[in-house]
Length: 100
Image (cartoon, rainbow, N blue to C red; front, side, top):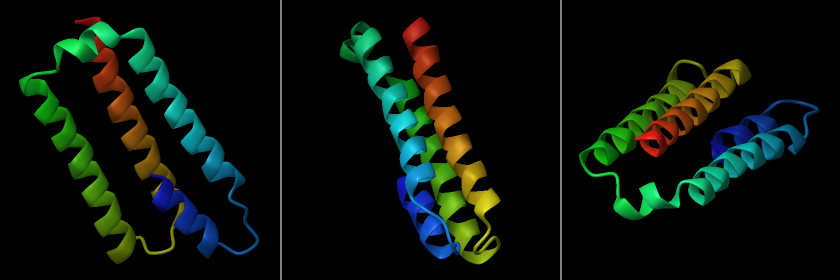
């Protein structure tokens, strides 16, 4: 996500890296809060569902990389969409596991 954000910030004229850095910080805060509050779930392991979660994230990331390089080249809205989908998928999967 960070690579996508910083790459597009570099390519877009007159932009700064502040907004991508803020989004990466938010994503890291979500990650840390989830780990800190739900360590019991983390210690037990995720089992078979872990492969599904990683597969979902990998498919979204791969699609984002391929489509941003082939079809949506230079489109900042697409990078934002991919970043939002990656953040939503990881947050939802972590929250689902923590609630089990």
